[in-house]
Image (cartoon, rainbow, N blue to C red; front, side):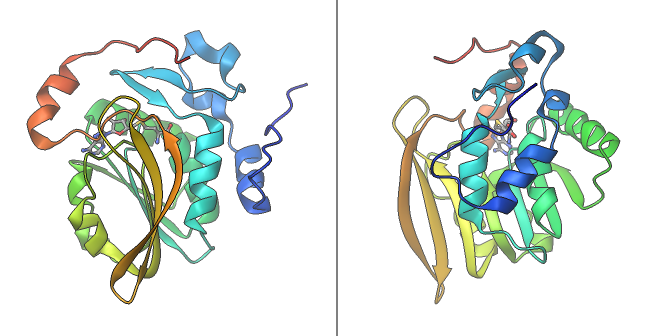
Length: 217
Ligand code: SAH
């Protein structure tokens, strides 16, 4: 019997834990890594990208403080696992992915699982998705070299943004920022390691590789 979700000491939001329990993570993990689908670690999903560690997904989701009437924007659909967790908790989820094949695969998986409140877009997440703004929550699942100004603009007053900021490699910080009186009130959460949020100029190089990254430490 699998023990899922793990007992994380700082994940106390019952709705988040229930969402993690309900979403079948193995449906988002490639065939060769099925044995690890319910281990608390990131895994390769192709195109040099990863499915995030479940603990990090739980932590970032908890920080977003989603309610059933929330509208959430996610940057970096990837395999769609985090998207599913958001869709369990929010009213509508808008998700942007720069690699078309990943967006299509995630859409297929999430449609098969029966989600009807997810909207997909292929494009540069740095620009957000202005047509549906403002958002009550914005989650970025790739590390931005700097705070993306368009995303700040698209966040609702009182809304939360959860985002790793820093260069590729180890020197990134996970932040939670709340928009209060038009200003971003920022809180440092933890050092993290995410794949980079690629800029428009970098995309061709990043998309060209179709290799699985090695398993993380
Ligand atoms: N959310 C995923 C993890 C995604 S990994 C999960 O649930 O596990 C980060 C994703 O961000 C990758 O799929 C990558 O292609 C995407 N990405 C990188 N730069 C981007 C950009 N500028 N716009 C949109 N997506 C981007």
